[in-house]
Length: 333
Image (tube, rainbow, N blue to C red):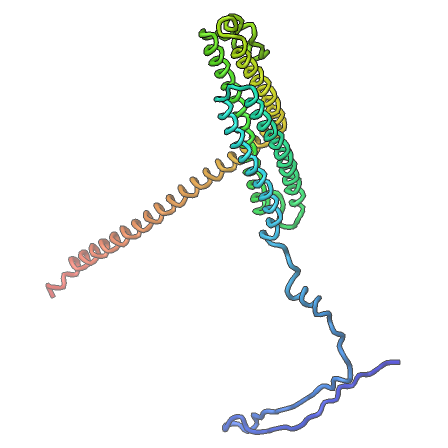
């Protein structure tokens, strides 16, 4: 059974009037043709879906993509700031230890420094873990539309990651500089202690033996007989405590160095790549500037050639006129 939908058209009025005086056949019609809405009904669309079709699906822009990334970077930089504060505390404690002459005071400083170095190790491992996660996120982010390798978003993420890795490596290098400083200053302190007690400046072999073993009784044997055992034993105990402190601090700082050996390799490799890119960009800029200069020179030459061509044409016309006048000789007529 076929359903026929009828459209009822009602002509309410027709107005006929000449549209111009010259021709009475030019007429206009005013026709009202309402369509009965109850004859049929079109299916309604989902307004939310229409919005998707007309407005387009929402595509995350670069700011949306980098928002979470930059939040993670801020977290790493916060950890680096904590490492900086701990480095300052360790440097201050090391300076304080130079003036210490009592074993008990040296032991207290050692305990403070060991606590701070343990905290450094904890924060450093956390920071390295977050950096590794950041690199994994960069790789997975390349699968998103418009964020492939070499895109603006990818380059921004890679450069920011490289910068934060470099900053973290530099901070850890500062701890290794502190380790070398502690070792060197320990050698100088031992040398001063021996000279103060014995009155003789020790040779390199004696200092090396003290640094390695911490045993100084044999060196101070003669001084014990001259100055008394009590005063010398205080110095011996202080040297032994200092030896133990330097040994333990150096061991802990070396553990930190092992954590970031692989990071150093990655930072250097990425640094070479960034330097390579910067070199190409610099060369491209130079080539562009040279090209712009060449275009300006060519434009100037073209302008000059046109000017001289005009001069040549004018001169040629003058010569032609002179020749024509000389041939015709109108003054003889």
